[in-house]
Length: 254
Image (cartoon, rainbow, N blue to C red; front, side, top):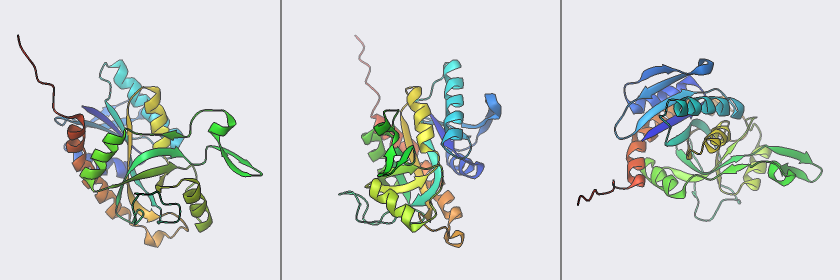
């Protein structure tokens, strides 16, 4: 199985690569560089594509196109990195995590949602789908989400993609009300998912929580522990993917 993992920045890429084992560097068009770990049964390519959904989509599309042209397509794309965690609130989904997404925890997206793709109207925010264009959500395979979350000890829930990081309690509350079950906020997942969908490749999003969504308090951020948690989560991923794929079919010879 070949897996493309897309992060925003080098520190996240390195945290994922640390779980994958020894890596070679592979140059891609556009100045991108992959870290390639040829593991068995899961081989990882890890790419730092840049911050934000546009950079994430461009980098992911470049890697997917290069793989297709080399006749070595990917089986799965994973958007990965650190992000902000929402506190539990009245909009929590039944059966969801009762403790929200605390610092250092792992979240696997069961919905990858563009939170601010749309228009402001006198009646509030209108998503782009209600304007008659595109999509605002990608839904990863539920069985795969369940397997990966169980292996990593993660919560499963909505991860929203934003172009502007939330910096106030009011904005955090607005997002939580608009997206029941939301656990985390990041800036790249939807861009990665759009590129994966265009190439017909399944997608996941895995986030570890470095800070709370809301007023920005950098003194309270825990980036180091979140990066360590990212490495730990990706150490469990090959086993989860193999379990989700099931046993290889038995060959019957005449």
